[in-house]
Image (cartoon, rainbow, N blue to C red):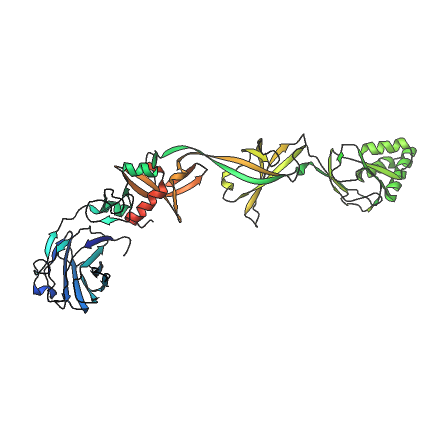
Length: 512
């Protein structure tokens, strides 16, 4: 049956005897097989049931069920079932016959039921609609009298059925005790069926550990945890290349990782072109003509420093090998030469990195980028000193995305005076996005059901109602509610999984 329909159980205990007893309703005689048979008021329904032949027989029998509303209008579209069962007798097990019923015309349902043998076959008829309330009808049938004696015909009640808090699969038409555990059965109203709410008494709440809380607006800050690594500060890299061809003489910067200081000799070079320019400059200087300034400028443009040119003047003759000095202090991270190597102008001979300051680079995915802005405070945690957090500031966010992983690179800058921040070392960057005052609930109060998010609202008097909500950002303890709840609502904060199980079994509401 459709989940949106409320079951209306019409329990008709019928003694269908093939020994000559007829099939009767209250106040129904042999005319019961006629289409205009008398109706029994069953809560909001008027129902008439008849069989053909009038005296049921072993084999196939026709069954007819008419359903009308209080205004005597046919109810079309209802779902109707009929099941007959012969009780077990001695070693013979119970036998069951299920009618194949369909709607032949508005409000009239006909079908066929096949009885395996002669005897008594109590029968149950179910009628279900999408909006009418539930009632129970009970009849007494005796083999020594004709017709049915109506045992009870209660008016429509707000109680749909009774169930056990410990065993929600138990359903009874009347109040009583659970056949499994002996606890008192609790009523389930039609409102609960339609809304999906359930009633959980105080004893049951204590047993399954239900706790409640109030929905509040609170300051909410979302932590953002990014993985990255230490890398060189690109603004502190120096490449050593020359503007003439030549050969390497003595090489002092002879391995990668070597520390050098500004002004130290890295290597010496021999170049016929440079030797000729030296001679030209020294001769022009001795003559004191106008070519002296031009020749000196040429030496400077070829990469020699003012100090090197002054040193050349002191030597008073051209030098075969000219020393090349470190332009900055740092560490040699790339070396493309050895002693005696030939080189061409423009070749990258050495690369020096100043490690007194480094970058920590990480990548943020596109859904995180709206929460991140340049200049926000950050904390850095390194794998080799995981117990410490280094304060920092976000200094750069790339204005473009990496097409492979849909992320943008960001970085923070850190001083590295003691040299512990080695490039290549893994690091974590922790950011905190302040989102202001938002409606939040404990994370444990939100139940995930496929694509839906459910929170149980406490309506009072033991009643709990499942509410579908739309959630937003969340941290390890709280989650933001975008819609579905309001500030001040009382909700369940613990035990939601057990409540959800009971709600599904009791109500079967569509949202589950």
